[in-house]
Structure formats: C-alpha cells, structure tokens
Length: 121
Image (cartoon, one colour):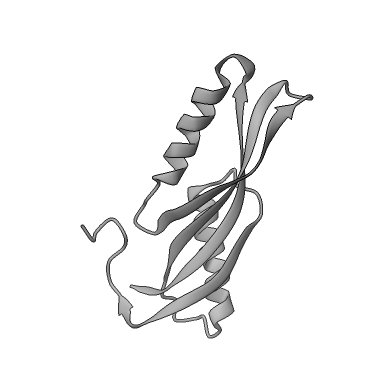
C-alpha cells in the first residue's frame, strides 16, 4: 500500500572518457530519462552544466532529474514530512550515485494506492 506520491529532484553527474564522449553521455542520459521502477518514475531531465573535468580528464554533464516516487504506508509515521524523507530514501536506493535529493511536495492517497508504476500497464 502506498500512502502518497512525492515529487523529488536530484542532481546527477555523468562522466565519459574523452574518446567516446558524446555517445556515452547520450546513452547514459537516455537510460535515466526512460527509467521506471515499481516505486520511481523519472518524469523530466534538465542539463544544468556540461564541460571537461581537468582533474579526471573526462567530459561530464550535470543533470537535474525530476521523478515521481511512491511512498509506502507506515503506521508509525504521523507527519507528512516524514513521508517526504522516505521518498528521498527510496530515490537514493534507485540512484545511489545521485547528489543532493529533495522532495518538493507530496500528494497523498485516500484510500491508499495498491499498485506501483510497473504493475499498472
């Protein structure tokens, strides 16, 4: 059972070697853009920055990733902000290399939602 759907934003850096820069970054970006699990669905990607990292000698792009995150019902939680925290944790499980993650807001379900994104086809 899902208590609500939070709208999260995360910052993700993608790096690629100098010789295969464009195709590698484009491929990785499209994998993230089309990502959908049972609890996390990426809705939008914005390129914040791109360039060449002198320390690692690799090209990089910085992405702002927006996603909808389903948050499971927890009978212990009494405040909605705790569900926002759990949404960020769930997003981190799916994207462990992401930078800062923030849940902007949450929509609650009443009655609770029973199926996730994948089970609705």
